[in-house]
Amino acid sequence: TLLDVVIDNDLDIAGFGACEGTMACSTCHLILPKDFYNKLPCPPSDEEQDILDMAFGLTDTSRLGCQVY
Ligand code: FES
Image 1: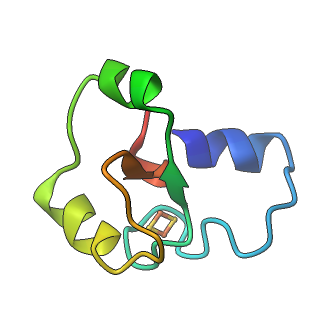
Image 2 (image 1 turned 60 degrees about the horizontal axis):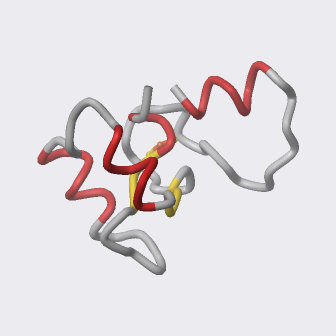
């Protein structure tokens, strides 16, 4: 996932991925470019969408970084 990329590369993004991918925090909220978003193999699951609905600045191309492969 994109969260794994952040962790594996020791990227210092304050608070990113606080729940370690258990879909409990929305700190991995990403706003993706539309062309990238449209290339993802599947839309957000209902569970992911529920967490996204609590994210600050939600957009039509928002995803959770811990759910994007
Ligand atoms: Fe918490 Fe993605 S890391 S929802």
